[in-house]
Length: 176
Image (tube, rainbow, N blue to C red; front, side, top):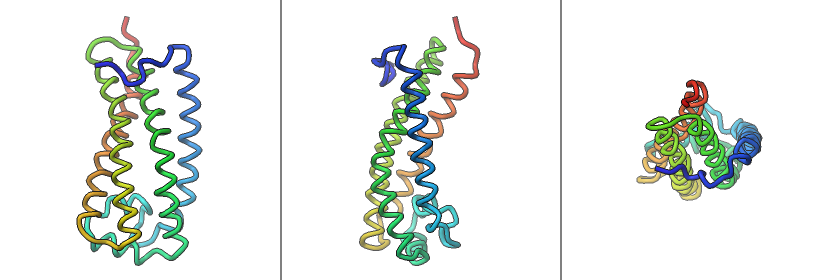
């Protein structure tokens, strides 16, 4: 299996990685600021609680706990996340590409799979955000909270798997 960013010239990989790392961190800081008014007893983890609500009852309780500022932040954050998706996907994919480049065989193939997984995470994130927007706009009703939670779970799996591969692949001694 070929890594999705294999076409990126070797000399450009590290500088692009640093660029997308900084963009990812900068956007993450913005998301943290947006998330503050959404942290309530019904949504202790803010937007992540909302993403993983899973049921119409839990999602409705979260929406009821948010004031207008929190709802506006949620709406803006959902839109802003569509810009974040390709940025974090490219960041993770570049990280896995750099780690995979240190290895041969199954470790390299695993890196290619993790690179594809970063883009799969972004696709599930897009569907999740549509479901969350629907709940925010029209109220909590099935199947939207379950769809959002399922997509969020898959997104988090691929996101975390990519990060873990990049770290482990970078720490495992280079293969000759």
